[in-house]
Length: 313
Image (cartoon, rainbow, N blue to C red):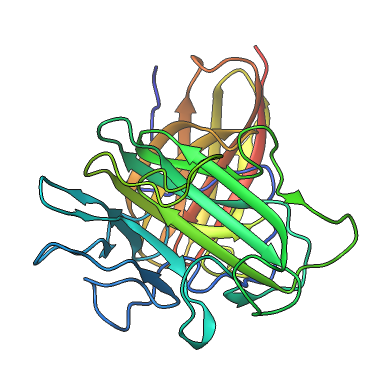
């Protein structure tokens, strides 16, 4: 596989089939805010604490998909004790457990984001979402919708979408009309619940990194109103795997270039580095890719540019 790049640097780090971004309601959705320091849960989230001196189950990491930081969640299991690696959105008034945490006003279908996961002893990462109707009353009485996803190992940032168990891409709603008014999210480096048990324990010291959470669409820019590339052109748009891109930028930013399929699966990482100010003219030869529709995305923490193209040989 060849990818000839005729310019010093460029960026593309996000591509999915839908690029609109609804009003963000998830607390600290991109894990940029850490008022209590890097060795703590991010703002708007809480961890279960730890039983090992000097160990922190939730920490800030610069190994991120977007922006400056992501959250790193880790379990610690040894012969004497266990620290559970998971975080949840904070419930009001000091309430514990699973239950309403933050206000919403839409019938969301799923939770999307990006993750890395190092699994030990057969652990699965697990994402859990509750949507409730009657405000912050209690942990279970007002449950309207439920989502759960178990995730396997991923060495690079990989898109995930939380629906109902493994059988449906969307949350399961108990009612076809009601609009939820509150939500709750739990992110875990181990399988914490299943169909018959609660309060499961980690199997090993697995590590989960999560970034860029959003309901219903993948998050495609720290500020979606900022188009980081002027006069962007990909030509020819229907090609045999050989094409050019041309655009102009006005700042120096860390950037990456990736190609995704239309299911948000990363196909190719073309570049990571600093994108210099000026006009960029880049030639690509990726003829090893099969015929089909793809997404080419140029992005930095200032925004993004995404373009669909077709390979037809």
